[in-house]
Amino acid sequence: METIEIVDISEDEAQKIMSLDEGHFCDLKRIDIAPGKLTRTMSAFANAEGGDLYIGIGESDLDRVWLGFPNVEGGNGHIQAFEKLFPIGNNIRLVFLSSRGKDGLVLKAEIKKTRDLVPATDGTVYLRRGAQNLPVSSEEGLVLLKRNKGLTTFENETVNVPAETVTNSSAIIEFMLEVVPSAEPQDWLKKQFAIQNDLPTVGAIILYADEPQAAIPKRCGIKLYRYQTSAEEGSRETLSFDPISIEGHAYVQITDAVRRTTEIIESVRVNTSNGLEKITYPQEALHEIITNGVLHRDYSITDDIHITIFDNRVEVKSPGTLPAHITPQNILMERFARNPMLVRLMNKFPNPPNKDVGEGLNTAFEAMRNMRLKPPFISQDGGYVKVILKHESLATPEELILDFITHNSKITNKQAREICFIGSENQMKRVFQRMMQNKLIELVPNTTRYTAAYQLINTPPSPVVYTAQSRLDI
Image (tube, rainbow, N blue to C red; front, top):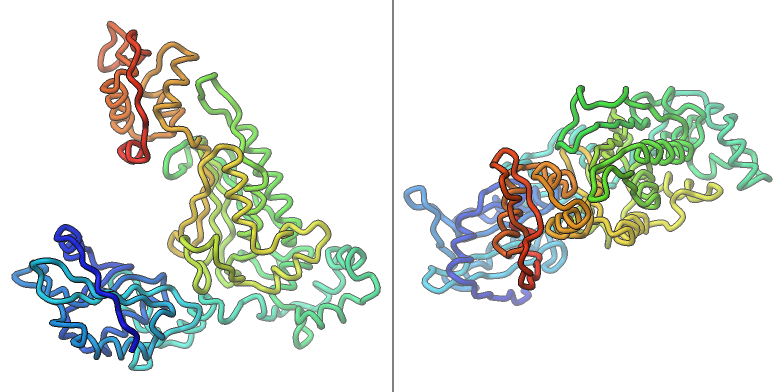
């Protein structure tokens, strides 16, 4: 058995562990729990997004207490059970935690999201949902989980429409003339496994049908929205126009979606230190994120891709969870294609949208940095992958405020919220208070709490360095 490290932690760190909330990413157990039961939690974490399991935390009179193993050997039974699920060091990290004044060693297991399905020692596959380990026993549930893991893919399912939908379409004829003019569409598509048993696959429909949305309705469209607000959610009152539907095969969809999104963004005006100005996003970032959504979405889910343009950001939501072992944290380093046929065949198109296979999101991040904008924010939002491009400068709120006052002599709370993209009036007040304490600005004389405005202070301020921590305090 591999030696497991013992790490000494402070009393404060130990208290933080005992105060953790059990939930989707965390669980705490006593040492007397049967090792087999613990593997249910480990299976659930591995089959979801991963998580941390602490063994050696009990309860006494509703309070958490540190009741660890008396020594390293005391945890052998649990560790042996874990090794049946994961070789130590492969998708799991084990460490013993000790703390002065605490009883025994707490075993911490950091479980990563895995590529494959991981059953518990009882043979059942579990999935973490909130603070529960839910058994996945139905065939339908296992099929869905396998798709989420990337073990199977919906793109290979056949569609009950004539093969001519893809063998005699304008899309395939244009493609063949450009790429393989010596081949016949039907023979070539069969060799690519895009036609099976004389029926086109989902992947073939998405790539080569003139109207994929007619063959597989409500699974392969794009909806484009524009809300005139910076709020968390759009509303009917702030919706600029009816949602735009973007259809056609995937290559056309990507081109049209990027073009329409860019056109709408160019019509947006926001308040800056120089007055109303157009906002801009790097087209490379928009292109790569929309391409990523079209190629990697889960086509088994009945929904469209949603592109939403707000005053201060663009959101792209793609149906489906991140596949296999991919997480928001490792997505720039790891590679996995949910729809490998789509990715491969799209790359054969002239001037393919996925030229640098596997580098799309990295390109988007670099493009945002080059424009001095904050990097894209990627999250798993329920059953969707959401990417947010914020029109938010890498400058601090303090720098933006000082720049505005330099050009306009004074600034109000409302103006500051607009240029800093801070929604809360109280948050903005705290920024002003910090700047006044540092003798950077002062209240404009004869203004009230209702008409408050701020100007540069008359006396030279002392040098102030704004740190990452000062930005976190907003």
